[in-house]
Amino acid sequence: MTKSPKEQTQDKETIRLRLARGMLLALDFEVGSDILKTVLVPSLNELSILAVVVGIRIVLSWSLSKEIDKHNTDLKNSGRL
Image (cartoon, one colour):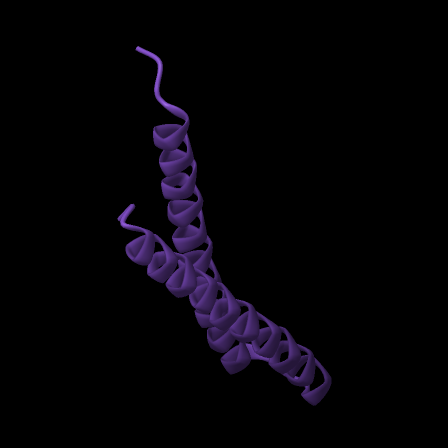
C-alpha cells in the first residue's frame, strides 16, 4: 500500500529523530571514553589535545540535543507527534 506524502514526511522525520538520538548517544560514549583516556595520558601535550577534543564533542552533543528538542517542539505544535 502506498503511503500519502504526509505519512512519508512523518516517517522521514521519525527516522531523522532516531538517527539524531543515536548520534547523541554515540557522542556521549565518545566523551566518556576520552575522559577515561585522560587517566592514562602521560604528557600535558596529549592531555591538552584530549581536552580540546572533549570540548568539541560536548559542544556537538549540546547542539544536537537542542536541535532534537526544537524539532520535537515543532512537531508537537503542528500536531504531528
